[in-house]
Image (cartoon, rainbow, N blue to C red; front, side, top):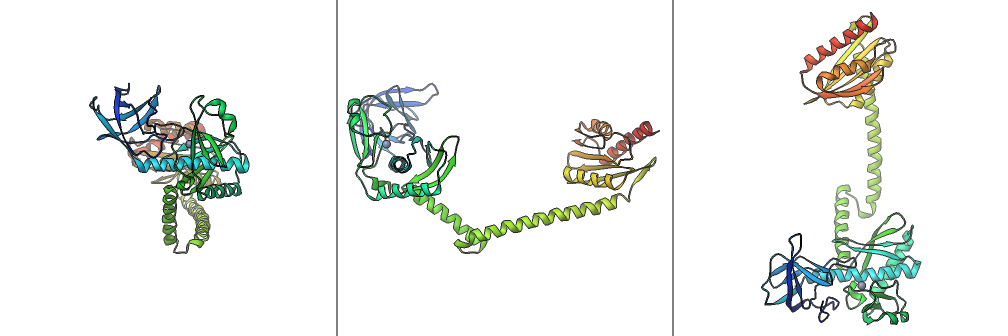
Length: 406
Ligand SMILES: [Zn+2]
């Protein structure tokens, strides 16, 4: 790996290099290694640069076995010089998020002693994990304030290559992960870090930091944040939502919450009202059905076919019927496009086992179900028409009455 020109020098957008090797990964991806490169390989929580080698798109860059592999679609001519071009918008954005993370990490530690255990730089959001179980709104505000004042003070970032024995002179946040050629990244009078990543020239280039949300995890708190242009993007997105809401509620911004609370209250009241009305409809249905029955022996048999009813409703209705009448058996059949569902119930004075009856009724429709001696429910495929199925149910019921009661 050449150190002549390297991604650590954060402001190289274009460079020339010679091809050292080309090869294919086991998964078929083609890669090129160069005598020098300004492409940053994935690492330290930061995604790789992308860009071009001549006209070939560099989709990914990885550090593997000490060499930096640039992944491209197809081989380049071996003898040629290549011009490498970094996707600068993306790189600068990464630099902002990355230095923003240094600042945020330092601010959390400085103010509250919370240490950062990991960093993730995502497509839209970044996050750090802090080794604390609680994080208050006030702490978040204080950290955000300090971090942004650090940006405003526009301190120049210093980098230094040092050896391990020199480390005593600096108060590093954590020991470096390498033992030689250690690169220090310093925000003067604020933060000393061993870091191989890419950084802007000064804290001012981070532009701003916004903490968006926090998430409690097992023994840590995850803090989601954005820096630079992403802060503006977030603000725009949130403003668009606010604008939509003010239109929807026809109310000014500062009254949206009141309007939403009112809507939720209305919704609750309406669902209660609907529940109440449903109950009244069921009551009405029950009163109608118990007047229309066939007699088998001294038992009233009530049968009804429905479409699009829920099982809960039919169960509720069955209960109401069997509580209203002692000598009653009810069969409520729901018939949908390709399924039958049914609920069987009996009054206290009837002795036949509804679960047994159900099993016999379900078997011709490959159905499944079960329940108690008094009430049972199940469903199956609509293998026959409603009329034939009702006749079949009649036969099963009659055989039970004869068997059990005669
Ligand atoms: Zn860094």
